[in-house]
Image (cartoon, rainbow, N blue to C red):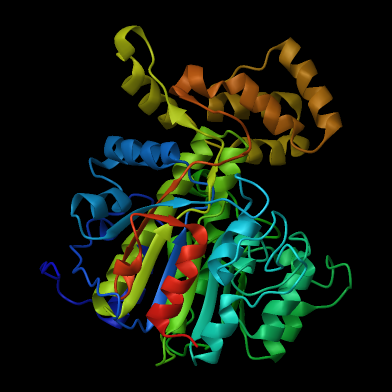
Length: 472
């Protein structure tokens, strides 16, 4: 065991008050939280587990975020700092599903949850059709609490796989009902539409049912940050109708920032609620929009959402320093988009300037620009695209835009992406808009982390958690 000096403990009040700065993407309060003491005995029991997932994170995404943070603040990401300090167990993880070398998020998270590989598209149903027990049930039976926090809809595949069972991952109305029936203690993210009587297919007001069952309903950042000293034991936080906006848009739009908390802020609130259970908890925290940035080949969106996820590693470090009986796992379920920084110019000498200036110049996601096109006239939208992407819309492009708007779907976002040309402007290129099948990064610290080998399958994490929590 390596003995590394601990920083001074942080009080509970101090831990919670730090959430006021958690929304600042490069906040010094969240950087360099001190060194960790390795606790790697396989036989050690953990009281709690924090499971951090940067959904859809290629190694290229991980690298871009670190390079850009160095450019902006002269420091490395929290994840890289863990490796620099040699303070964690590090592994490569194979991410295959039962029916494909390239997994989807439903099958990947189900592998963690059950220890069994299943087919893409299902959540905790085996290939033979049998229903599998999600890890939430085993954790709950041990007397512990459970929580799910995400930047996607809270009913999306990765959080759902820790608590729900559906044969088709798109059954999100059912997932929302199962969370209530199975008493998941903390649910924070997007996806209000799956809980509202106005938008659910069955017309049921699930929000009211959650409140009747003792959940405190939160629907704004202010409500999340200002709950007062009296803490509810169960939370339902729904901060957007569907997925939460990308971090780049939250950072640029005050009206979004006022409504939507950061992932780190949600994580802090979840921890302060779950820690009321003296037996401990399992908390999954997902940076889910990293994956969406990969699907959309949106370099500005993916870099900023990866950095927002990295803030959560700092929160986990703080918490585990105060609570060393906590096992922390940080990983991704698969890659997405295959983004990489490529050499630019003669001898690649233009690479750095192209990348840093190119990311600095991006002020919106393609998704955000698509969302506002119908509310603007042609000149207004032309000016906005020029301001946020430095892309000129001439008469020819204006006609292409008219056609794309008529098509609907992602047509406008895809058109903006083609005009923007991320390789020409940033040096970043993509292999596809799909998931990818490479081995992925994983690190862990705390009780039971030494049980993780240097190369593992996604299913191997299930028994690691089970042994650490001594689940029956």
